[in-house]
Length: 134
Ligand SMILES: [Zn+2]
Ligand SMILES: [Zn+2]
Ligand SMILES: [Zn+2]
Ligand SMILES: [Zn+2]
Ligand SMILES: [Zn+2]
Image (cartoon, rainbow, N blue to C red):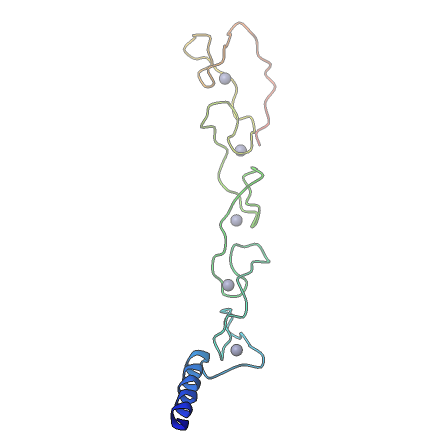
């Protein structure tokens, strides 16, 4: 009976040795910047991007991608310019920043703007003040 008990302790300590890796650090150290302790391989930190370059400051993994939520064509994080003004819905305005891109024109003389489909009269003299872009 005593022998069996001894063997059980033996087995359980073996399992522990296997599961715990047989090593425990007093203080985990991540010298190579992979978020893992160099000696026990325990995860000690998570990716962080404090300089807003979309790359983790430690392991250099990509943590985010460019986005412009305020719609000014400039990435909110890395300040990179993302694309040019474009008017895909033909309202003479940029789909992203709402800047005025063009003015109504009627080349086929049907009194309807070729771009936005709004009524357009050639009789009306439009002011020739240049519209600043961007
Ligand atoms: Zn460790
Ligand atoms: Zn990282
Ligand atoms: Zn960016
Ligand atoms: Zn724009
Ligand atoms: Zn128009």
